[in-house]
Length: 295
Image 1: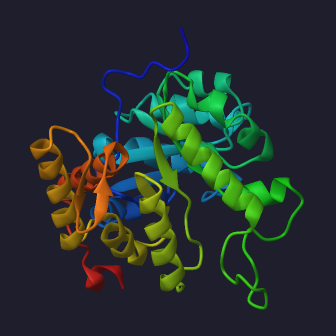
Image 2 (image 1 turned 180 degrees about the vertical axis):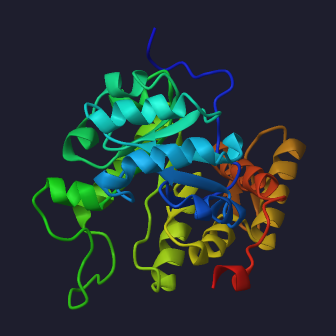
């Protein structure tokens, strides 16, 4: 049976900020882990083809905490994919990110807990089937390879366009589809990276939207982005106070409909309040970043 069950010990992100690190830069491994919640050691796009053998050697020789590490492997069907899996077999890592995931077999074939990265047109059309694979524990999406696969030139509106800096509609559709597929199959969802490191306002807005839609984490490419992601996922004191009032009020009313400050509270609102409290609890021990260390 290959579909819709989930490993009993399925890994989940210990925090919302996932930081990519090139696997051929072992001197950065521990620094990246120290400054984030999860480090994604990248054997794919961040490493030039001629450096991938050295990157795999570095991966094996420089172990990190496997509970806070994901290894991004090359697309299925490539020689690098097979060599990546062989190298991981010599480590304690148990979670991989499958680049350019396009079919169920490529997920099952890893024989590891796998985050499927949906970043091609074919992968986007098959995301529901991919999410149902037994060892698929989460989904992430990517915009740049997607747009390249469309024959396009930009995933975002340009500076002279009306929605400057925001994703174009096709990218937003894939983002939404990935989120829905993850929820439908009980997988966590990771939002895509914000490539413009200096666009803090844009990152903050995207994180705010990701949290509102129930994303579990957001990936990033620079440690300066980590604090903004953590702050965005951490509920404010006012949100936590509201959520507690909702949960306590529901208990007082035996699960029936009631109101708080003029707002009707029913089942869906109760579930939203429970999510806020769960996020607050999960982030209680996630540290704030050190701005000086990120410089």
